Image (cartoon, rainbow, N blue to C red; front, side, top):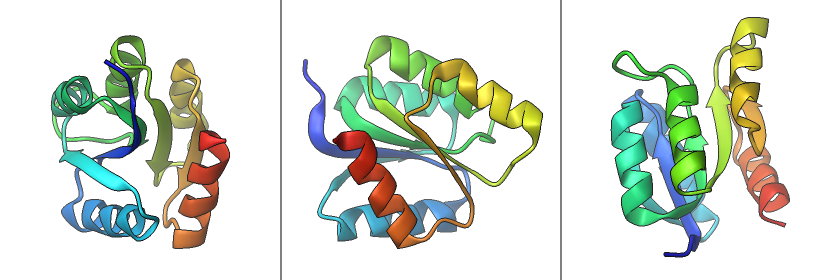
Amino acid sequence: MTLAAESVLIVEDEYLIAELLSSMVERMGLTVCGMAATADEAAELARLHQPRIVLMDVRLQGRKDGVDAALAIHAQVGSLVIFVTGSQEPATVARIHLDHPAAILFKPVSYGQLRKTIQDVSA
C-alpha cells in the first residue's frame, strides 16, 4: 500500500486543539484521515489509512507518548511526522529527535506556520 499523498493524521489528546488543527489542514485542501488521542489508536489509524503526514503531540492519553507512536508509525508506515508540542524542555526535544522528525512546531501554532511546515516537508 502506498502513502495517501494528501492525507493527514492528527494525533492530539486535547479535543479543541485537534479540531483546530483539523480545520487548518482542511483549509489547506488536504484530507484529515483520522484523529487519535492515544499512541495505540494513532498507530492503528496510520496502518489503516497510510497518511503522508502525521501531526503528532508528545503528551497523549495513556501510558505511551507521541514519540512511542511516531516510532511505530515510522517503522510500519513511513509517514512524515511533524511534532506539534507545547513543551520546549530539552529532555522532551531530545526524545522527539529519537524519531528523526520531519519538523517540530511549538504551540500555539498559527495557520501560516503549519502551512509552511507542511509545504516544506512535502517538497
